[in-house]
Length: 160
Image (tube, rainbow, N blue to C red; front, side, top):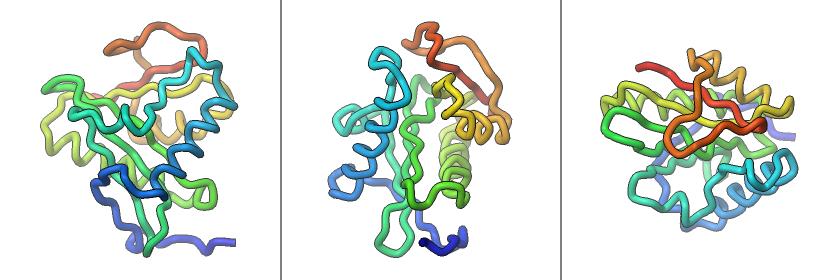
């Protein structure tokens, strides 16, 4: 059993997506998306998708242990998208998602985005994610960027 983390013990840093720990966490993320959503409704990015120049990817570490990740995609000069938010299963419900989301929003403000949006699942299993985003002020919105209406997706946005 993992002891509870203190937020001061977490380091968030830009990651090059080359480490085996990152590959493992993203595989865990993708497997969960496959279990929760039909294939046409999975919008999670694989390693190559996350390596695009418009995406910055961060990892959260405690000592030498990877505990979470998140990414920010620049849609245009005023609009960013939250991607690949994931907390390692062993560390869920310990505030890592909140810390990562706070970091991503701080970066979006530093980049002077006017708005940040995201897509997440509509199924009950995604309720904790939707509650997290709503707790930061995200509101439900229409599909944005290249997304289309999908009964398995919800779209949220936050004006900065």
